[in-house]
Amino acid sequence: MDATAEQLDELVLFEIVDQVAWITINNPDKANAISPQMRDRMAELFESLNGQFDARAVVLTATGDRFFCTGADISVGREYAPRPDDAPKIAVGEPRRMMLRGQHPLMASILDCELPVIAAVNGTAAGVGAHLAFMCDLVIMSENAKFIEVFARRGLVPDALGTWILPRLIGPMRTKELMFFADDVLSERALELGLCNKVVPSADLRDAATAWAERLASGPTKAHMFTKWLVNRALDTDRHTIAEEESWAVELNSGTVDSKEGIASFQERRDPEWRGF
Image 1: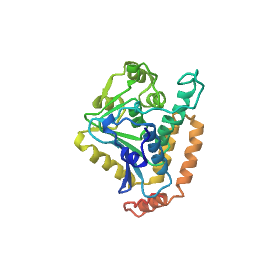
Image 2: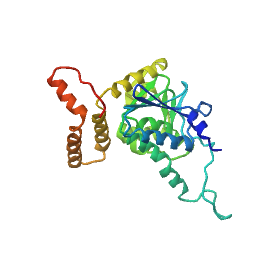
Image 3: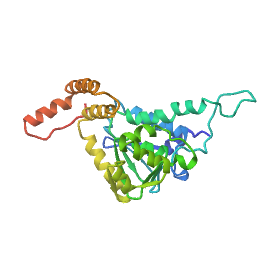
């Protein structure tokens, strides 16, 4: 059954505090699994932050201290197009379209968000849930959190752009190890592999995420935007192309208020006052 708008607002919490947007998965009864409606709502929220002035950084987290996100909520039925009585329940091509129209746009909305996004991973992040965190720009884990590339346990192929992002974070061989064996990756191991930036006690997770997010939100927002775009492009772009794009980014950024403030504050030997535009 589809959630009402009011129910959806409770399943995906959203607030802006001190120019930090908080997107919180709030489905603890289902281990913070995400339904198609929740998935689409999250993508909509990330996209809505582009071009806004009231938020300058984002934190993606979840309620509780056991689960960040355990993947897709498979208890929610999918609707398929009407078909003849003798047609299969799920026809070839339908799962592909579901992926391209659902999970992939959510992952892209994080990668393409103009603001820096921090994942505050409060518990188990499995499958799609792990990939949600990997798409973020920075990852802070609580000490009890873990990642699981759970797909092989179910005889499934990894999805939600996991086979694209993981090799870029930890290399092909480590990626195959995690995906073939589907073992739990505890927080300290995740830190060692480079899947997170730091690990903190569970009770300190929100404070740690807030500190980084507020630091980003008080920084040169457009410079962060260009930096994120260039770094995300770098591993898929040849040197000559990235040199051209980097040069354009430098030129465009030089016209921002913050760029001029950065130069002025340096010349005047004072701390800069970043405005975010």
